[in-house]
Amino acid sequence: MILVGLTGGIGSGKSTVINYFKELGITCYQADDEAKKLMNSDKGLIKKIKNSFGDSIYINSKLDRKKLSTIVFTDKQKLELLNSIVHPYVNRHFENYCKGLEDIYIIKEVAIIFETGTQNKFDKIILVRAPKEDRVKRIIKRDKCNRQDAINRINNQIADDDKIDQCDFIIDNINLEEISNKVLKIHNSILNSI
Image 1 (tube, rainbow, N blue to C red):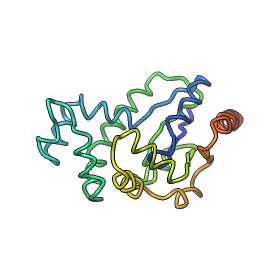
Image 2 (tube, helix red, strand yellow):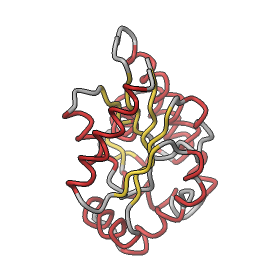
Image 3 (tube, helix red, strand yellow):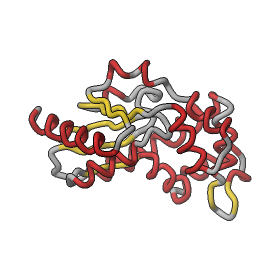
């Protein structure tokens, strides 16, 4: 089974691209979504997060994502600490998810492939890009945060220009019809490479 990484900065439109692959019948694992679920359900992970960020990071047994975001997106060391705690749980979850799958290829969406140095684990990597101002607007709308918070989140990730040479495919998220066509071309390219 070929493992395809799908990455891109926050607000670039990775979920939009994933949905096009799903329409083609491709199995897609969205690491960020699974991480959010695990941070609210896995007792071991919850304990580690509380030990590092304090018990008050959970309210009524639910992670206060806004409070955590404020902490980690203004302190790079705390962001690295959070990633070092969460990623082993997500990776284990992904390994279990893949057991028994017989797909030709699977897509694993991970926003921070390059930030975590895991690019070598993928057979192919797709980078999703979008204009910075579009990304800022999407983040503000989706996360109900202010402009500076959105910019801080963008600035905590490696710039597209610094990872483009290590990616096999690029999708510019500007026009939905173009995205659909590009996804189909990438899909066919992956199938033809097997």
